[in-house]
Amino acid sequence: MEFLKVNNLCRSFGGLKAVNDVSFTLKENTIKAIIGPNGAGKTTLFNLISGFTPLNQGEVFFNDNPIHGLQPYQIAANGISRTFQNLKLFPGMTVLENVMIGRHTHSKSEFLSGMLNLPWTWAEEKKIKKDSLEIMDYLGIADHAGTDATSLAYGQQRIVELARAMACEPKLLLLDEPAAGLNMRETADMAKLITRIRDRGITVLLVEHDMSLVMNISDEILVLCYGEKIADDAPLAVQQNDEVIRVYLGEDDA
Ligand SMILES: Nc1ncnc2c1ncn2[C@@H]1O[C@H](COP(=O)(O)OP(=O)(O)OP(=O)(O)O)[C@@H](O)[C@H]1O
Ligand SMILES: [Mg+2]
Image (cartoon, rainbow, N blue to C red):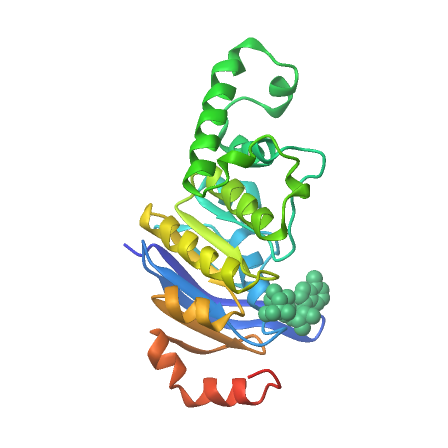
């Protein structure tokens, strides 16, 4: 059985091939990074897997079940959760509330009955709260449970988003640039957190520009360039790959 299998994914915007015939597999309980220059198609690839962008061609299998063509909430219900390149926390809500919203996708009760405070949701709500606090504790942000989420330092806000994605109890977590905007110390902390998440039995696929983080924690690295896969290998092999070196030396910030 294959944990995640992506076959020949294609997505164009007008004449631009943002993702062009990309295939790869992901083993359970590993960390795989997707790297590549700006505009390489990394976020688009995430959007295709998680159903946020419809694909033009290709297939995605999760535990051998086809998930291409499903709606984002259906894919989430299958056990795939994600974060976004741009933070999407709700202002005016506490850290705990922001995390609990993630957990609600797992809740059997309708959102409306939750809002109306109907009695049969109380027990469920209590459990969601308990589980959310447990995840926040695991990620080291439980002390901030009652704080307005958007008043936290940026690095902490990224961890709240991580906690929210984990609150859905995913089997696969897609992280789009979890270290973007973080300083060196926060980036090192984020690397440790991602490793802890993997140690919890959650498989991680992440897009990231920070090479030290990627090289340190990834089991495999997939390199995209202009929508095409140019490498997919262990970190050391990718580092020594001629085409990868050419792509990165061609960039000013290589
Ligand atoms: N909704 C869209 N409509 C039109 N073009 C898009 C859309 N989304 C992405 N693109 C284009 O597709 C290409 C790939 O974009 P994508 O955001 O996937 O790149 P990326 O690798 O995530 O880049 P970055 O590192 O800057 O986040 C870019 O040329 C982008 O302008
Ligand atoms: Mg992106």
